[in-house]
Length: 102
Image 1 (cartoon, rainbow, N blue to C red):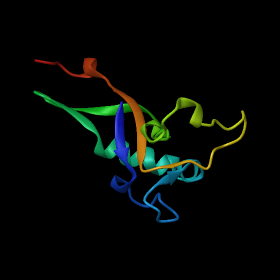
Image 2 (spheres, rainbow, N blue to C red):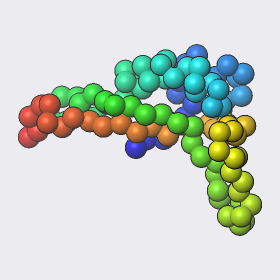
Image 3 (cartoon, one colour):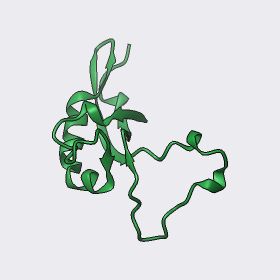
Image 4 (cartoon, rainbow, N blue to C red):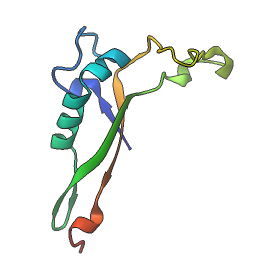
C-alpha cells in the first residue's frame, strides 16, 4: 500500500486545484495506472520487481481534523461525495517469485 501525492502525476488534475476528485480519477484512471506502473518498483539485489495488479482510489478525508467521529458524514449509497484528495491510495503487489531473491 502506497500513498502517492497527486502532484507526482502529470495530466490528471483537470481543475488545477492540486487535488483529485472521483470524477478526475475516473476520467484519468488508465493514465494514472500507467504512470504508477512506470514509476513504482521494488529494488532487490538482483534487479527490480515491477508493480502489478494496481488499484487506486482517492485518499479518505483526514479524520484528524474532526473532533468527533460523528462529525464525519458519509454520502448515501449510490451517491458520490464532493471529496477531493491531495493523495492517492495505491494498492498493488510485487511478484517476488518472478526472480531469484538472494
